[in-house]
Structures are given as C-alpha cells and as structure tokens.
Amino acid sequence: MAWLNELSARQGCKVSLSQVPASQWENIKRMGMDAVWLMGMWERSPVSQIEARKAEILRRECEKILPDFQIADLGGSPYAVRSYSPDPQFGDTNDLRALKKTLNDIGLRLILDFVPNHTACDHHWVREHPEYYINASPGSAGTCPDGFFRATSTQRRICIAHGKDPYFPPWTDTAQLNYGKRDTHEAMKEALQSISELCDGLRCDMAMLVLNDVFGKTWAQYLTAMEEPQEFWPYAINSIRDIRANFTFIAESYWGLEKQLLEAGFNYSYDKDFYDALINSDVESLKNQLSRALADQERLLRFLENHDEARAMDVFGRDRIKAAMVIHATVPGARLWYHGQFEGRRMRVPVQLRRAPEEPPDKDILEFSAKLLEQTGQPIFHEGLWQMCAVDGWLDNQSCKSLLAWGLQHGRERALIAVNFSDIPSQGRIRFPRSWFGATGNLKMTDPIKEEKYSARIEDAETQGLYVGLKPWDFHFFHIHFD
Image (tube, helix red, strand yellow):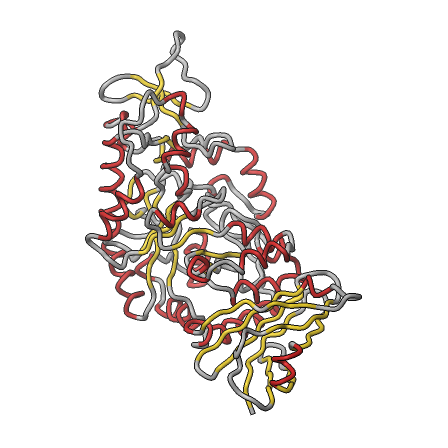
C-alpha cells in the first residue's frame, strides 16, 4: 500500500495496479530480479482498521516516523485477510491477472501472500462456519476467555480465538483457524486453489504455525482430538501442483523448522538463522551455515530486512552494511531484497500505515547497490558452482577467524569473494578447492566494485593459499582471469 501511494505521489494522481508504469517493472527486471512479491493485495478488514487505530503503541510508532501523521493514515493489516479477492483500492481480479501477464511477459514472476493460520475477525466464515475456528463457550456472565472474541453466527453465540504465535500475545484483529478439523483443511485448500491462478507463487505467512506438532501444542487445551491427523501443507501443496506444476511456495519459518517445511513441499523457506548470524556478526555461525550441503542451502530464502525486521541500514550501520550486502548477494539460495533497501532507507514502516515517510536516497548506498547488482547479475553468480573456501592463518596471528571466503566457477570463469566481517583488521590465506584453477601461470584479479587490481602466481595460490589482508568490515569481490 505504501509503495503504491508513494508512486501515486510521484505521478501526481492515484495509481492502481493496472496503472503502474511499465518502466517500474522493467527497471526491477534490469536490476536482476526474478520475481516481485506484492504484499497486502487482499481485501482489508474494517475490524483490523479499527484495532490498528485503537493501538496506542502503533500510533506512537507512526507519529515518530511521520511528522504529519493522521489517524486516517492507518488501515487494516494485510495479514488480517477479510477475503482472498483483491482489495478494491488496488484493482480487481482482472487487474491482478493482467499484472501477472505483464510481469511474465518480461520474465518476472508474481508472488502474493497466503495467510494460513488465521483470517480477519470479520471474514464471512466467522458468521457462516464458526466450526472452522478454535471455539470456546462464553462464561456464565457471557464473557469470553482471554484471547477470544464474541462472535454471532447463524447457529449460536460463541467465542472464537484470536490468531497467535505461541510466544507472543494474540493478534486481536484475527480469528484463529482450527487445523484439527477436516473441513478447515478443505476450505483453506480451496482458497489456495482459487488464488493460485492469479499469481506464480505464494509466500505463506508464519507457515510453521499450522504444522500438526506446533498447532497441537499451541491449542492443546481447546482440542479434544485432532479430527484431521494429516499435515495440511503436503495435502494442500500437492493439490496445487497437480494443477500448476511450477507453482512456487515460500514458507515464512522460524524456530529451526525450515527442514520440516521443505520436506512438506515448500520450494523455499526463510533462513532466520542466517539473518541472526549477520546481525550478531557471528562469523563462526556463518561458516557453519555456509558449510552445509549446497542442495540444502539453495532452498533457503535469505534476507537482510523485511517488513517484520528493522531496516538493514539502521541495523548494520554504515560500517557493516556493504559487507553484509556482499555476503547476502553472493551466497547460495534465494535472496529477498526489500523496497527501499537499495536506497539505504532507515525507517521501518508498519504494515498498517498507508504511506511511508519521505527519505532522500543515500547516494553512496544507491551507487554501491547498483554496482553490486550489476556484478551479481553475471551468469557465474546464477549458473556457476559455489564452493566454500577454508581460510587459515599463523600461530601468532589468528585474525583469520574473522574472514569468510567462497569461490564460484563457470567454465573458465572464476570469482572469489572474501569478507572480513569483524571490527578488527584481519589477515589470512585462502585455500582453494583442489584443481580449482585448472591452469598454470598468473592470476589477474579485478575488483569491479572497488576498482582494484591484484595479481598472483597460480602455483603459489594453490600451494600456499592466497594471502588477503582486509580492514574491518572490508571485502574483496574478485573476477579472476588467467594469463
């Protein structure tokens, strides 16, 4: 929503999905992106809007980033879905179909959201099918238990739980679906099928919450038995793949449940461990993660920021941001780049806020991002073989422990990335995989981002390792050529 309103302000008129200039999508493709994830396309909930406008903490957060904030700037949450039809302010189903075709025609895929754990409190199922939700009976005074709301259905007056993550308070603008019920599985599968024709893939919000073991533990006191013992995800994903074999499923996942969701059929899963290791400058953890089997890493979605996290520029700061971006851009797996990240934006915009604050682009980060994307758009970074490199040091100098290094090979092309992800100067020797060069003579190493050049003898690099010395938070981004 904020992006379209920002675009509308630049155009001088309201811009809907069908009116987004083609140049916007073409520029995204030129930057090397494969897909566009659009948040908040589904019908917003008036109840969610009321809840947002009542939330004092949210209002204070918005006032902090928008000096001219008005209560009307707050809309409903995109994750309290009232209906899986496009929100009228963005367009209609035909607009969404047309957008998918526009993106597909230039080589981009369209990713939308699916929210499996809950619906908005004013979803029509609450009235028509309260059995789809976690229920409780009102108390003697007609009140609901904490975390529930009073719902009037066509059948009876009942209490329905608000959706929640077991480690946090309930989301008070949502209604918790009951994945112990066969009818709930069927209804959500049909919802998936209906929206799958409008996009090329879905990012599934908090996907781990509907795994049987997680769901069962979260709602144990309200479940007499799991009527539907099968896992929802394999059942639902396979039903879509029977119709659309190349449809992409992305799991938002935490608590180390990535593997379980990938085994359930997801193409990709969030890699929160990678993000946390970067945030904490935990080089040892990064090395362990990047030493895992390549096939496993390639199914992870890695990010430096998203709508739930603070802005990368704010978290990493000017000292660390470029090194973090180089790591993120060159490791295996899918990569998520968030709107405003390339401009170095620092203000996180709550998902309920209709408009974002004006932030002038950080010219240094904007120029750096352009160079980085240009280089990582080369075939070697998409088709090359990625290999982790060991780095060692000397008995009296173990600063090498702060160094990360990996290489890529594609035909006779070679690329080498070396990063000092620490606040101390670091030196070490990079050890290459056996026969990695497959040649003799000299190496010519060119860093197109920093505009530096180095040379070395292949024999020395193979037998002694390639010496690197890097300042704190510095990197080498080498294209390697043979004499």
